[in-house]
Length: 356
Image (cartoon, rainbow, N blue to C red; front, side, top):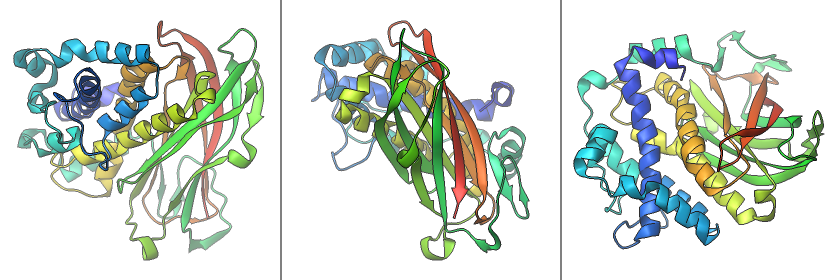
């Protein structure tokens, strides 16, 4: 969400802070469980929660990394109730010592009616600030549609990354780059793809993903799946240089954690809007990027080195699209080290959403 959108709007500030704080509370819960499993129990193993996903990431790392992660949040976990109230507002009521999922606790808290967004406010915000490229009935915005059968509705939507280009290498010679991905739709379904090796890059080099190009396929056949339009989709990518290539389990756990952010935010959004609907899904998607930034800036770099911040792209379809429509994207990444936060490498990706 652009800063100008939230600068003078208390409701949007409240919404973004609630989402960001939920992510941070999940990190605290994971760290607390590392420090004292009995005092900070996690939700049941068969429940998908962001805190368990983060704990799972930490557990496939060396002991020193786990300790570093736990120590980062130790002070805030042990802060007084007054201190936590100052930091988290009404979310200070979330109990880290309860085994109930953080998202479930957050969505159970009452929301002041003055902070809820009306349906009209939601639609206005989406239309004014959304970076989302939308397909409107009879009109395509922000892409290069190539209809093959304009009269036939598509039944699938694919997110494809054709290639990666190295703008600046992370290492002195060549980078060994792996690409991970995650996706969420406004129906609360999450998908993830563990980082896979793309290639060795030197400055200015482009490498095709070839057979690995299609990362996600969504069903958008309303007749068989019940998909209701408007429908929102977000796909995210992250790069890792060297580290995850030799630790596939870590890559898998990391992709799952990213994928659960969108689902978590969908869950905690209950009660923040007066009227649910397609515009609601779209505005939540707008705030996902802010939560990913919190996750990428303050949580993941504590755990791994040479990691790129996640880059997300969003598509909202106001109506069923025709077969063969293509929405092209150009995504930019920067790779930094966990210790310094200094950007060392940068990349671009050519991606596209395609209907069939």
